[in-house]
Image 1 (cartoon, one colour):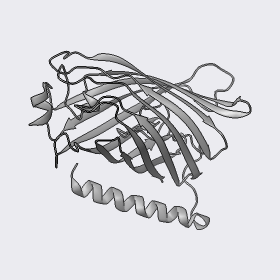
Image 2 (cartoon, one colour):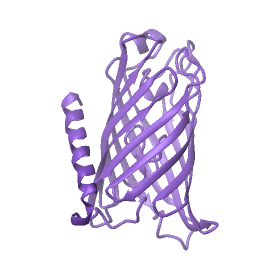
Image 3 (spheres, one colour):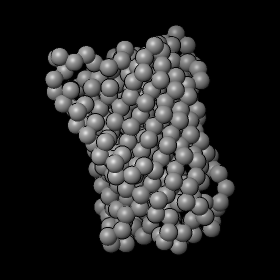
Image 4 (cartoon, one colour):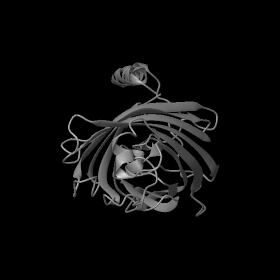
Length: 292
């Protein structure tokens, strides 16, 4: 991925938002319920902002192809993370995603950015998170995210990271309980991620403290206040592979707005913990996703 990918994605996003503005003349995408495509996970998969869900991106049913494009910005006190990407859902069974992250190192290393490309694949194995209300079985999916750090040298390598690229593997289980809490829909998700990534891979993979894969849990809980507005929280446990800097778990509180199947907006408050030499990295998260 390169700058042309970004230009094409931004142009597509602008066109999709324009289509939403004229939605009275444009049919909405897909046959699934509003909000069941999730939002854009920061590494490109459909799900919450921090963790993937078992749901397939877009609103396509088993007879349809759908997808989305997105831009996400996370602004803790001392850094800036921008992610831009796309998801493609095939017949509510297979999801492919592309994302490019740019992480500005702020005052830690002035005028320095770390870039990472992420290619994702997700396959639904069993269950339906929405329609299987008569059973406790959740929707279950397996996925992977191949990541390549484009700026491994000098920063991540100098910190003790072992590799410039790596692959995360995950298993997600998602269940939507219709009218589950005081008449409001409740979505619960649990993900187990097998990873060697340092700060999602932005600081490389493996390290002097640990170079093996570790199994990390991730959780999401979401309540739909209305069909179009959801509030939730997420937790993502992280490995701690580098001796030089402590790596903390990620947490957030978010609100997502789905004015139509064409577009969604997500605003969150994130707690990213210690990043490099800066502790207590907290700040806002904003993401816009356009579906087609």
